[in-house]
Image (cartoon, rainbow, N blue to C red; front, side, top):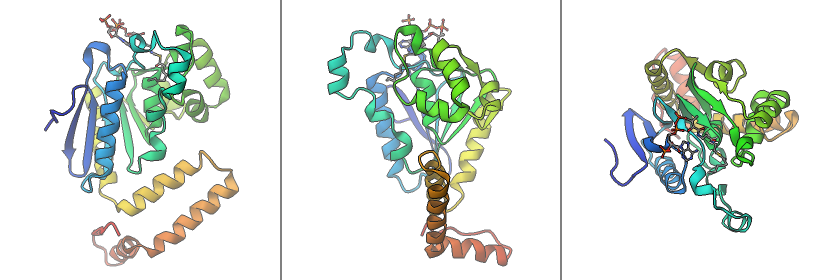
Length: 263
Ligand code: CO8
């Protein structure tokens, strides 16, 4: 059920091994205020440290994943207060701190910080009509939570530059074509069902292998090809030291379902 300790998010366990966080600030289209981000961080860290949670789904409402950072909160900020308090830093590095896989299910608006939050997830699923974009330029500012870096890695410099300099939105259908989203669905219901199914599928694998897989794919965004392939091979070798590799390959030989030990 929903957790009463949170005001701006809902936290549930909709399927075995799957933790879901639903952004729930409908009056502001899930604008990412500091209190909301604090709750989101707490919920993610709680899932990270809960052994029964094996995959995490992050979503908003049908109308909005998140319409950006809270403009009303940011409007009066000064350089020195943003700089001295490291505004945004606490939530702009989810991919490096969260070890469990995170799927973002995006319907409706994913703008500014909302687009950046989605880009921090390991997998984006969306509706074809989802509305992605980095409109910060229209507000006299720029993306501040990794958008200029992660969007550029996802779509290439030409498209990223056009999107960030014009502030123009792109659809979920385009997000899928450009490789930002893994899949785009025709309806909200289908999006949520398929997102849960994928989270459940991942939750059904060895935790050790899943964490290693996420780690090596993320390394590809940081390392050159030679170092990346070497890192992958080291981790691949290391997994021969896991019980789950013996179990997985043994179960294949015995034509039975593997029983993961997460060891
Ligand atoms: N911040 C604060 N309030 C918002 C935001 C926002 N980003 N987006 C919407 N709201 C509020 C509106 O003010 C409105 O509230 P009220 O009824 O009190 O006036 C309510 O949500 C509903 O919004 P609309 O009436 O505008 O709804 P529409 O369906 O007409 O329009 C839009 C939807 C197109 C999404 C429109 O609301 C919009 O353009 N929103 C702003 C989008 C935007 O510019 N986002 C980027 C923000 S800047 C940013 O994210 C910088 C990131 C830096 C790093 C992250 C820092 C935390």
